[in-house]
Image (cartoon, rainbow, N blue to C red; front, side):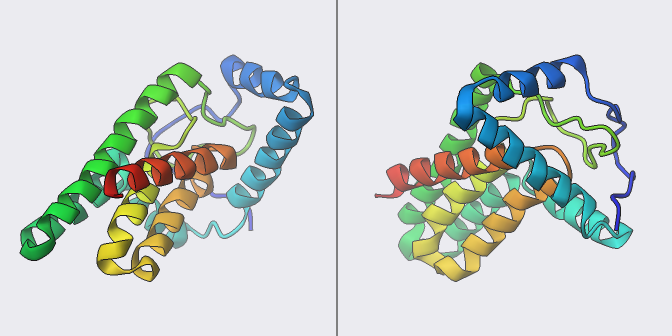
Length: 196
């Protein structure tokens, strides 16, 4: 099934010059850069052209919105602090890790300045606060939360949610897979540092 063009934003349907320059630079970055860029494009195109029934897109978009500015995870941490008094200090540290991962991710994004994907015929399906892509803040905050909250609620209840949140950004066309992997690594490292 082909991707629907529905969106709550109206980003351009064709690549911007900055997106083309970014992709060309990655393709010129030697064998590793070429391999990553090609894999990014293959996985991105697959994610943007499979499973895109309108109801699924609406559901994924609504879920992905909850991860904006780490809101879902900060709210979960606040709930943990309020409801689990004996382990409040552990919830506080884990939630601090989520906030730290989000802030560090934003700083890295401003330095890296990789434009979001803009591929012919595959428009972005959700509005974003910026057009900067690397690394994914949804992935970094989600995996910081997973690393910090897993000892409190169990890995099986938080890592799958973090993974779906991160993957939703490729499905919605606003991140390359390498943005997600970099964000997940950053979040795991920051989450681990603040909870150990």
